[in-house]
Length: 325
Image 1 (cartoon, rainbow, N blue to C red):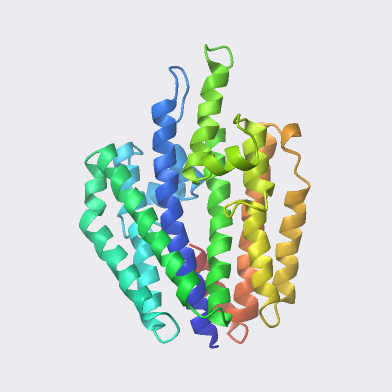
Image 2: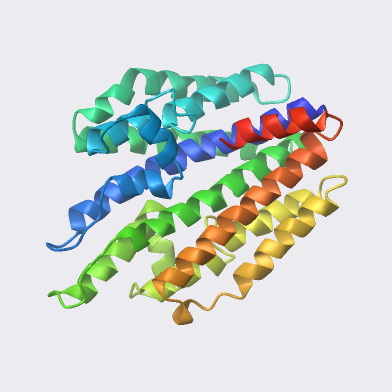
């Protein structure tokens, strides 16, 4: 397979996963804000900080309110990580690789892009309208994943798609978890425990994990239980452990994957040392930051090993910087 084709497949998967999880992150934050008791604080600017987009946002907008942040994260094509931009890039990558992908895949992704072009502006009119549009994005993205898994040959091209999906999913899971640490709830306020439980329930629901958590982990929702589940449970497809294990499986099926594989295994080992009951919020925030950096290192190792192995090093560095943006 050509290195350019492999890179486009990998980023196609990452862009689609990022679009879906950004939609999940926005809806989750909205739910958290609606459930916060009087006296608790969470600003909309937290959303762009957790997504790592605060510097880009400040260059384009003067005020960080709900309207400007939603515009920036959903429909602003100047933001390469907005939902519309991600679907647009995925569409372009799919268009150039139609000989490697199922014919229906182009139709699905193009349909998602056209839906967003027509409806992205509606997300600014009301929270209810925004919720409906973003849920439709998630549903259409699920149809794309089902098509890839059920129709596409599970060859080398499929492994690059699967690899991109799981690396991006792991990164976005850390960011959705991180939202909780931006919420300040006074411990002396009435119903403090109930408020904290509702906060963790919102995190689970953002990842479609609430029912699975109660079936596999516990009926009662606790912070330590949710952290343990979303970080180390290898049965749930959006946990960090599951995503890294899937990435490891992909690399074992690919030639010359040893260097990248060692980076993935190192990240898994660090996660397996986690003891959620002994962590305070600051320590878990640091763990999530470290995990995000490790995922960045895995991405860089992939680019060096497979995508730009024979390029001019100076050009390679510029391309990697642009892609990671």
